[in-house]
Structure formats: C-alpha cells, structure tokens
Image 1 (cartoon, rainbow, N blue to C red):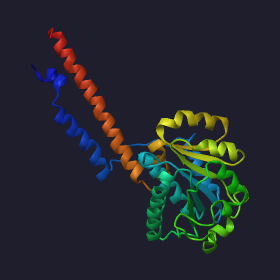
Image 2: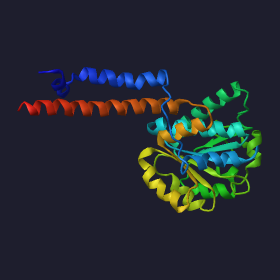
Image 3: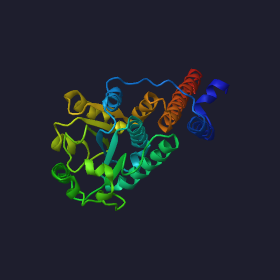
Image 4: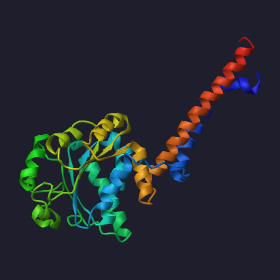
Amino acid sequence: MNLMEKFDAIDPRWIYFVMALSLIVPVLKPIGLAITIDEVTTIPVYNWIESLQPGDIVVGDIAFSGGSEGELGPQLQAWFRHCMMKGVKVIMVAQWNTGERLGYTLLEETAAELEEEGISAEYGVDWAYPGYKPGGTTLWRQMQLDFWEACAEVDILGNSFEDMPLMHKFRKWDKASSKGIMAFVAGAPGLPTYTTYFPDYDIYLGNVAVQVPGAMNNLRAGQIKGLLAGLPGGAEYEILLDRPGRAVKLMDAQSLGHLWIIVLVILGNIGFYMKSRRGE
C-alpha cells in the first residue's frame, strides 16, 4: 500500500489531534483570517448606535441561555461596548430566566474592561439591569405603561430604582424614552414579543446561526432593522469597533476546523480512488 492509498485509513488519533490544534491555537494566538462585513445585516446595527446621541437610552433583551452563549455572548458584549463608547445608556431586560445571571455576568465583565480603558460604564448611571420578571410576554406590554411597577421597582441585584439615576429617566417604556430595542434571541419567547407588542419600534436582533434564515424574512419585511447573524455577526461587530475579541478568535478556530474537515474529505477520497484502481 503506497502513501496515497493510506489516506483512506488515517489513524483517528491524528485526526483528533490536528482538529484539537486547529481549535486551540487560533484562540491562544489569533490568525486574523479575513472576515467580510455584511452590509445588509450587521452594518444597520452598527449605524443605529452610531446615529444616537450621548444620553440616549436603548433597551436590550437577554433571551438566551448558556447553550447559545458561544454565539450570542460575543454579540452582546460587542454591542454593549459600542453603546458605552458612544455614551448611549443601556437598560437590559431578560425574557429568559435561565440567561438572566449569565447576561449580567457578561455585561459586568465588559463594563470592568471599559472602566480600565477610561470609558464610563458605571452601573446605575450608564447602564442598568432590571433582568427577568415573571409574568410572561404580556408583562412587556405592562412595561410600556409603567416600567417601574411592572418590575416591582427593583433590579436583578435587588437595588431600588429610586437609587439608580438612569432609571429616573425610564419610568415608562415608550418611543420617547427609548431609541430602539436590541434583542439577543436563541428561541421562544423572543422576537415575536417585540413584533407583537412593539411593532412601531425600531427593533434589532442578535440571533443564533440556525435561526438566521427565518430572521431574514423579518428583516426583508421591515419588522427588524438589522441583524447580527450568529458568531460571524459578533466578529463583524468587533472588527467595526476595531476591537477584535472573542468572536474573531472563535471564527479563526471555526474556519480552521472546517478547513481540516475539507482536507480529510479530500484525502479520504484520494485514498479510496487509489484503492479502487487496484480493484480492492
């Protein structure tokens, strides 16, 4: 059996070893593979925040859990960083109780990094996190009438809204107090909450890759104005901010992993073809 024929029976240990290197090395030392910015999906989200003025308020929603953090976590952090860099205030809610604490951890981590860079990201002043409130999606309708009452006047940490300067500017969730909605969604409840109860608002979406084809219909219909599509969406946003981070690293790893799979398919077919020629 010559070398070409051996490609049909590569030792699985080598396959897994090279795959592990393909995934680990780019995370430790990013390669910087080219990433194209999508002008239809990602650019509108970026331009939205760029168009706002310091002091404007936007609302974000955590509608995902740990299983989708790999895709939506980097999106959330990049978007939140952009808001803080622009002086835009952020109020975060959470449709999913399973993602409430995870979302707060991601935001707190990013806020600490921003403060170290000299960018104001003070909790209660620049951002606040009322978090998850029981009551189902209809509670979001009540938030538009009296946000404080709907949230029992406390945030995720039990702090009173009275002690948070930002919340005094957001007693009612309406188009006058907020300049748009950014929902990070991995399933239901998710986007339909906003297309149902907030149809006349500017809605933007961060979505897991598997749901992007369906979300494109909402984008074409004008129900949402922009879309961060899976991990690539987070990486594109990081590049737009000139702050390549976790999403860019993971895209490098993902690309190399896919490349190795393609190489294996090619080698396997070469080995199979060479054996077929010998009649084996």
